[in-house]
Image (cartoon, rainbow, N blue to C red; front, side, top):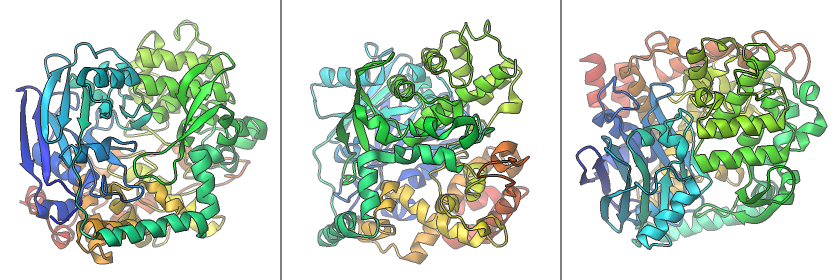
Length: 619
């Protein structure tokens, strides 16, 4: 391969304590590139259907993209893949920071972990070598403390690591994989899978250089990106995004109908109010900002370090909450305390928890409490009333520690409702996972993405939703012939997800990722190549779920989220989304059967690289 890859993958079996290095062939790289494309392909190859997601036969992968460690701007993302203990299907969780590029520099494009250790361990990878080490002294430590301990034990101050906190050790279904103290591969319970394997961390350090096929071409593209940030059409917005991050529009989103309110049942301007909503804007929270934070190769830098020196929850060193976090612990719970949101974010970071699912689970518990399904004695004395900041922090801490009522809530709202035998009528989940913080009633394309992406309940997946959020045109609610346009949108997004580029580059200059891929790898990522790649990757993820016995009817949107019944007042007044029509259009455009979910044989043959899948489906 000309550039973008080390050409090696690491396979670690924790049960037998064996480590093998295997070549990543050029054919495999061309067909599935990296990220969750390569991840889905390897999971399908290594894993039999029906394995227990929290058993030793689940495969946990840490997969880079070809743009990692090449100098490509925004090229700092990696993906964690596994079978989800929440949905029972394929899972991917994307994260920034510095781990992905460091894994490449340490000599590997991906690490796949099978089996389970009989005691806590971590994997240490340094410049092409790898070993399994004892993690007994690390077990029980919070995520940041684990990183500090790894640095001390290895003596390598510049190492990077993915770790789990105590929530992952206890196999909370909301546990995530943390890196760089506050960057999270957050969704779908990957942290619980890591915990089930007794794997505390994967620590990496490397000094290797990743080849670039066309260095001059990549340099020119980077210069174009840098110029667009200073002088392009999106210069002002990208500067604002770099200054305030994803949370700069939190208040406006809650009032416009973009953010869900009161467990998806409320109306921002009525139930929450303008004053409350804007208290959680990053511009207001940034009074606690101490310095800017940027991920690897990022010219934007949307993160920030905070110090909270006032109020009931002082924090010497913490981090600015992302928009999804502020909405989940804010408008979803009718909470207007910035300090409470920052504290909940800090708890989740330290214990290794997905802030979207935790905040949404707290909101669900609050509605159950409001309607008498839970009583004070049951919650351990915590009064889960709407807007009760102290209670929100207290129950979040209980979830993180797995104590009291938090022990059952740590399962997530859907699994908690099942265990408790009540509260299902208030769930806002698809296939067990809590919905993210963008409302399909404002951007209807999200309904299809949340419901029928192979990893449901995700907002950072391809579809029409993102472009509709601020579109006032009522025609966006029409369902006629939406399939082809949605497939085209997915084409772009799948390319981003496999390349290792941050989606936020779209705020600066869309359409640059394929050009970067061409410069780095030396392969031509033209429109036809992109489309074939997207269809191949989308189908690969989709057929993993089919092999698990999942069919479209298993994926159901909660009624509130699509306006059934519609709200009677507010910005979403009278809106009901025909989510099934949108889904049928997409399935038809993908050439998938809407009843069985099965792709046509011809569609799989057309994209290539899936002969074994065709044999599995058609014999």
